[in-house]
Image 1 (cartoon, rainbow, N blue to C red):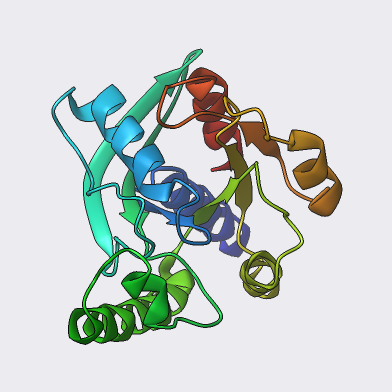
Image 2: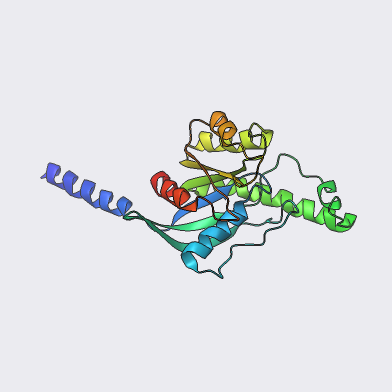
Length: 211
């Protein structure tokens, strides 16, 4: 009788976990790597052409609060995932108001922006504990061995969260996928242009595998 009960509960819980809904996928990375561009691409592809996640800007830390889009369904090659997408503020180890005055922002506004950005980074790190999977978006034209990137990957490794790395901006001449692959060989990596839509189908396939 006890053995039969064990089998029943094992099957029951296996079914419950297999049907888990609202998986949380977080987009993380340094400022201006293209997280929001990728988030917008996902929303446009699967929720409708006019749906955007947030505003894209050349000014760093444009995204300063957590943004969430719920119930996104992706289907590729007979496989499907349903998830809530979380776009997070760019992670930085130091935020100086002068980053913003360089874009002709007045000092008062720049200091407010720096304060908001710092608060956003703290929130983003806190949200890591709620993520089921994390997509790390890196600018493939920049050095992957930066302190910020190492900090992000270190936080994820400590939490044992499934990770997919997206090397963004592969359409640019300075893009170097091999450097990113050499820096983080422990994770799957896919190169895309979130802005132009290059290679996003491969990204969706890898995302399904990772989740």
